[in-house]
Structures are given as structure tokens and as C-alpha cells.
Length: 307
Image (cartoon, rainbow, N blue to C red; front, side, top):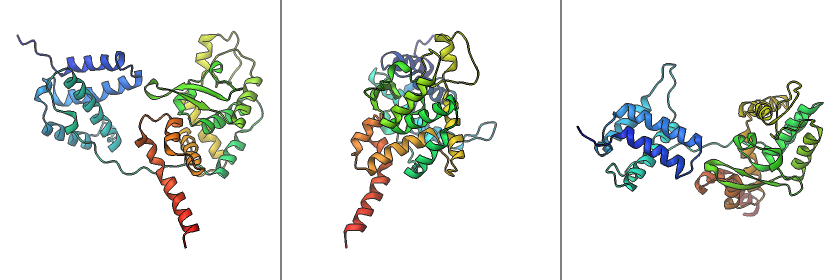
């Protein structure tokens, strides 16, 4: 009986390696598992040394033509995520002297240039003003919007915020972003003021910074506090409904506020490396999606001053 290891064994070892030795987030490991198991299901539980470039070509055709039972297909970006997972897996195998296809032989599919949606200053002020309503919920919603725009936080980072980590005197705090990478983010004077107003109005002792105030609760403790923490979906709904109330036609999401944060920095003269650090991007390539903003600004300067 052969004792040769097959793909399923190596995939399990790779996932353990990413979780423990690479200290990747639970979500990253979960995504790797999903993408690699799809390849395993398609290719079969064979030895990794049998994989060829032609196999990868056929697999990519499979991904491109894939359709689930509800008729949904895979976008180019999602197809690339499958390939990125494979390349990471092959890199791990080669590092451990296991013969397989060299990852550098696999190219990613070219993705059409992204169009970045952001809000103008006038739209931002309308959005902030529309968040104001009587009571605690209005104070909370205004604080959420001001925080998203002031810091450029991802919605997942905002959801995890606790009272104790936000220093309103120094107007800064640390978050852990993608890959659990720590970074310092800064609050504007106005954002700090609105967070303080919201916190001062609360009569609970739970730790989450932004919580559900739907109904009165007694005996708040740590467990109850986590149950009350606003979810990603809740934050997205607050942003969407407030934008609708403000009469903004664009689709407004927490990520649009993140785009607006980066765009405003660049338009006011910030260099792209600084913006990269403030956004928590591991690669400058990711931040370069905003170069359309600086390009537009340079064109305006050229047209204004060059005759």
C-alpha cells in the first residue's frame, strides 16, 4: 500500500501552517480552505507533482464558466482569489521540498480598472447633518459616520472598536487590520467631539463603542455587551439609510467613506505612501487605485497654469 501523501493531506497541513506559523486571520484561513477545496474537488485527490500548467488552464476555464444552482457566476476578482490561494499553496509545497508546479508560472487574470466612488465635501456635510435626530440613536449614528470618515477605517475594524481603546484626549487609537497588522489611526477634533457626546449620553457599562439601543436592557455585563455590539450589516444599513435621507443618489457604503477619506487626503497634497499607511494597505499597489484623483488634480493644475 502506497504511503504517498495526496493533495487533501497537504492542504490540511498548509491551512494549519497559515493559521499557526503565519498567524493569518480566521477569515483568511477560511477563504483559503474554500478556494483550495474547490480545486481539490475539481482535480481529484492526487499527488501535487502531477499538476501541470495545462491543468491550471483547464481549471481556470472551469472557474470562468462556473454557475451555481441559482445561476450565479464567479467574477474576475473572485476567480483570481482562487488562483492566489493556489499560488500560496504551491509556494508552501516548494518551500517544504515537495514537487509541484512553480507558482510564478501562474499569472493572474487582468482586472478592469476600478472606478472609485467617493463623496464630495458638500455631500459629506449633507450626510453628517442627516444623521442628527433626537436621542441616543442620532448621536450614535453621527458618531459612526464621523469616525468612518475621520479615520478611513474598514467597517470590520469599526465594528470591533471598544470604549477603552479609543483615546479621545490624544485623538488616536490602535486597530488591527487585515492580517492582524496593527496601525495607529487618528480622529479629527469634530469626530472626537461627536464620539464623546454619544458616550456621555449612554447609561450602560458595556465595552463595545457602538451598540444597539433598540430596547432597554437590565444587568449589562460582558456577555450582554457583545450581544449588543453593532454588526457589519447594521453599520451598512445606518450608512445607506442616512445617505438616502440626505438625498444622495450615489450608493453610499462604509467603504465609500473610506474612499472619501483617502481621496480628500490626496487632493489636499498628501503623498501616496502616507495614505497607504493610514489605510493599512500592505502593498502600495492597492493604494494606487486612487491615482486617478491625483492625475485629475495634476491635469487641473496644468490647465490652470500652463498657457
